Image 1 (cartoon, rainbow, N blue to C red):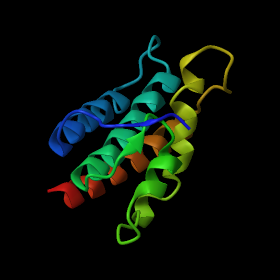
Image 2: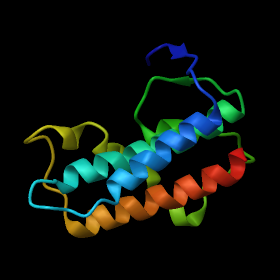
Image 3: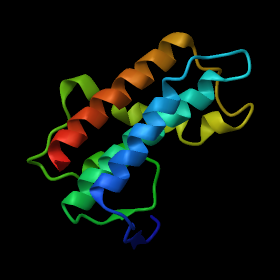
Length: 130
């Protein structure tokens, strides 16, 4: 496991970045925009939302893109909402979708689901942080 490090920024900074990623994930797809890239931004939105909560609670976290790892660091008193169930599977979009041949092409349905989960997680995180 990589060493823990202190992440710069405030919870608000993390949420602002998460919203930016979510907006990118929700972009209309053109012939040149790949669903894999849009799903990468959905994963980034979810990751940054979780990191906002961890920063708000002064919980250190390793350098990771693994959503499950970040969820496991949350205090027991903070439960992921049902709408964001399955958030850990967004981790597949963190790295493997960024390079050709690493993962099967993403379907429209998978993209819609990734955005739905990321948005639910982000709205939930914003409520906890504020």
